Amino acid sequence: MDSCVIPLRHGGLSLVQTTDFFYPLVEDPYMMGRIACANVLSDLYAMGITECDNMLMLLSVSQKMNEKERERAMPLLMQGFRDAAEEGGTSVTGGQTVVNPWIIVGGVASVVCQPNEFIMPDGAIPGDVLVLTKPLGTQVAVNAHQWLDQPEKWNKIKLVVSKEEVKEAYQEAMFSMATLNRTAAGLMHKFQAHAGTDVTGFGLLGHANNLAAQQRNEVSFVIHNLPIIAKMASISKACGNMFNLFQGTSAETSGGLLVCLPREQAAKFCSEMKSQGSGFGGQGAVGGAWIIGIVEKGDRRARIIDKPRIIEVPPRGSQAANQDNSTTSPAPSPNLS
Image (cartoon, rainbow, N blue to C red; front, side, top):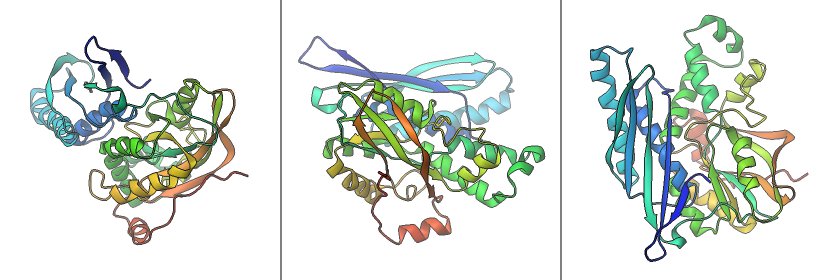
């Protein structure tokens, strides 16, 4: 499971708790703090939990930074973490800071809740639909942005993407990672979700496999659609698929929720995600959520079909995104052929 559930001695309550930490991946320390907090909270949200009672922050300050660098960057990182926690309706009450060769940031999130406040990730049934609430491609976007200053690597992708498109994709990835999955967690209850997880370091297929393996019923997950930040698919192809984006193992950070929903509820879930979508940085990514596959009878594994449909998700603020937001179209359905 994404979080541990510990039954308490009193009144049928449970302590639900999670911890996570990683290295910085964006240049802005404030945004990195927000992303780290969103990533920690996402493990609670993946179980349909919308409230967090308390957070602790874990911070490793690099011994390679001089005093001026520390005084400038670390307060911004901590402020970003605190602001995201406040947005999630909780607060940071403590933590641990150490000096280390590398910067590491993360935290602990804890909540005491009733059984009806969380959804155990094991109830998927044949006929359910798989929904993803954030686009893929954050790893590709972050790397492509770094390559702007590395001519040898930039030359590999410059024929398929412009520098402006890379910068837009990087901003989209950063805002997406900093957006809390709290709205999706609440909608899991409203639309009777049967199971869920969040998509992070193991990639879409890795986390789908982990979720499939936990199911009580003998089911398999079949993924037909891959919503990807615009141009990241082209970059991945130009690089010889070095990120394994189409195979579903490209690492994501603070990615979306992968939710198993009753078929009759999936489109309504996606529609409400779009109508409520206001991720960090303004209007959330175009679409808000996407139907990406189905649950069928099987051997508790997940797979991506040989030629999945690639859904290009334009960065917020781009001309394509503005055009998409001016229309309302139903969420794409899985290709069941």
